[in-house]
Each structure stands twice: as C-alpha cells, then as structure tokens.
Length: 350
Image 1: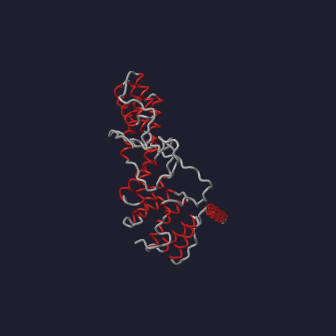
Image 2: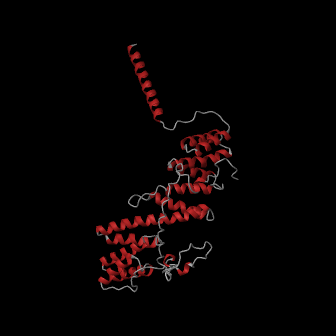
Image 3: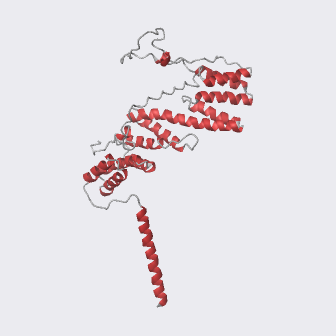
C-alpha cells in the first residue's frame, strides 16, 4: 500500500509539473489564436481587412487565417492567402510572407494576382539585402525572383519596377566581387583577385564598379609582369571612361612602366546633358524655367559608342533636396506597388 501511495504521489507531481510547463508556454505565446467561433466569411474577411488597414498586422493574420480554416474551399480563402502574405510582410516576417506567396503561386498559378504574389516574394528578398561585407544569399534570391517577374510578366508595372531593382542588385553583387578582389590583392593572391575583377567586367559591366575593376586589372597584370594585358585593359578603361579618376591613375601606372595607352586621359568628361549649359555664351541672359514640352536632345549625341566588351556605366543621380517640412509618417511600409492589394475589400478578381 505504501509503494502504491508513493507511486500515485509521484504521478500526481509529474502531471502537475507538466500542466505548469504548458501554462508557462502558453503565457509566452505573444500571438494567441482567436477562439474558434463560426462566423460569416464576409465578416471574417472584412474584419481582417480592417485590421490590415489599421496596421494591426498580427490580428489581420489571425482573421485571414480563420477565413482559410472555416471556409477552405471558398473564393475568400484564395484571397485570404495573399492578404496573409502581405500582413506578414508588413510585420517584417519575411519567411512567412514568402511561404504564403509560394502557397498562392502553387495553388493558383493562372490567377491574375499571381503576378502580385511573385512581386511580393521578390521584394521580401530585396529588403533583406545586407552590406557587401556580409553574405549575399538574399541578394542572389532577389535577383532570381526579379528576373522571373520580368520574364513572366514583361508588360506589367511589376516588371518595370523589377528592372530598376535588378540594376541595384547587380551593383550590389559587383560590389561584393570587388570587396573580395581587393582582399586578395592585399593578401598577395593576385591571380585570385584577377578572377574577381574579371567577373565584374563579364557579368556586371553596366554597374558603377566597372571603372575600378578595369583599373584593378591594370594594377594586377602589372604586378604579374603581363604588360600587354595591363595595357589592353587600360585602353578599354580609357575608351569608355576617359575622364574618370580611375583611368588617370591607370594611365599613370602604365606610363611609369613605359607603356602608353592609345587614349589620353581627359581633364573633364563633358558629354552629358548637364554639360550643355543653356547660357554659356550669354552671361547676362535671364534664367528662365525650361519649357515642359520642349523636345529632349537625342540620346545618341550624349555618349560616344562603347566597345562591345564594356558598356558605359550610368552616372549616379544627384540626391534630391530635403523637404521643408517632414512628411506625415505612414504606417509601416505601405508604399509603392505592394500597397495596391488586389483583394483589399474583397472585390471580384476574375
């Protein structure tokens, strides 16, 4: 009897500890689920949309989740998947947002809103891009998904924005290659550095890193004693960027070694529209605002043709002046194309 009593006591203690542990775990749950209560699908969806509009992302996720659980085969369930993805994105829960977008794409690949799902997924990766000194896994994912948007939906506004972001991603990836190449140069591993700089020229030749990559190749080939290779890359640099500081430095390196590129370094590169000063011959002329419908100068007159190996890198735009008064803060990230939710109010998506 004593052994049985002790056994029951130990069992009671184990059960008590388990109950307390479960209670403790429940207390740590920051996202308690809604109590199950069957409600009209329109009401659940409208409540989720209201929470989304008010910036209550977690609550929006819960209500749209209830739409899927209680009405899994309705058209509202399909819409709720994408709305859940957007709510997760707004809450910076990128992994969940990507999973929701993938689920929508796999279930409804032919739906008109699939383009939005692809775009949301790409933006989730794009916003996770970090500086060039760190791992660029998200950068590669962003590039792949942005390119997929351009291929699948070339005439959409999503593709237009994706093309702009692809240029930014390529510049980021080129910057990573340059960082590694410079490190190899400092370590004396010149051949490895050459491989990185050639990657920039071959894959990312329209980025802002191209002039430096060509200069670094000149520097590396001179270190290896390959004068002709250094001269050839110097000539390409001079042909494309005669007024660039990187070419002036490369020209100096080559001439110090008795090598002379065919292109003399320009003092100032005045080949852009900005260099066409409207009153350069008339200092007393009154400055007038430009005519809105005046025809633009032909692009062909702005920059001379570049050789096939390298294209001229686009110049960086000037920073816009700060507004006189700070703009009114908007909730979280609800800007741009992603804020144009296809099913925000439950409209017909067919």
